[in-house]
Image (cartoon, rainbow, N blue to C red):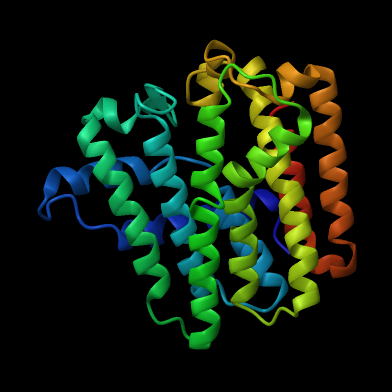
Amino acid sequence: MTDFLSWMSDIQHRTETALDASLPGADIAPARLHQAMRYSVLGGGKRVRPLLCHAAGAIFGASADVLDVPASAVELIHAYSLVHDDLPCMDDDDMRRGKPSCHVAYDDATALLVGDALQTMAFQRLAARLPGIAPARQLEMLSLLATASGSRGMAGGQAIDLASVGLQLDVSALEFMHIHKTGALIRASALLGAHCGEASPDALERLGHYANRIGLLFQVVDDILDAEASSETLGKTAGKDAAQNKPTYVNILGAKEAKDMAGKLRQDAHDALASFGASATRLHELADFIVDRTF
């Protein structure tokens, strides 16, 4: 087995290639929109969601070529969400992945259309014929991604986030918000990968529990980063949550307790994978990567 960093680099390269091939060329009309779409998707990000998709799918014998499709679809959804999140009517951030946000590099209207187009492209990508995947299973995958992206998932979590500015939430309310805003798409990433292979209902349940822990872990770590890391490290404006008076794990629990919570979530994620044995090594490594990239 190759080492984790080599494997991660390979999946990131595969995802970049798949995304580049699926996005319209920058010279195809409407050129400005297509240029902005490519600007917002390519050449940035750690591709955590595609990594989860590939790592989960490999456990159940899914081929990398098939996994490229849901991996790129979920990354298109994630990219669209970042473009919309940065808009002045949302989180109002001028920097993303170390460069000007889409609405700054282009304009607000173009950024809105970029998000719309990337979202629909994700479903167009996932609706294409997948070799070896039964139509009923593919419909289930489309439904899974739609639910994770909509009002019962990521979009709903963002709505709760916007409505929570200035409020004093408890930990359970904050967890409910982030299970939707961040966790839903992360969970979908892992399950989409598993659906490309021969995963039993019991295995899907255990994988879903792992992914739920990873989703919360990702957000706890993001909150710690926002409080402690520099804008250069983050690739986006540091301290935005505090400046906007948003509830976070750091301002509710304190930095030490938030880090303790991250450690517990990481251990819970590892424990959820116990029955998969060595086949889940990459998922174990991803849990560690999410934490160790920061502190």
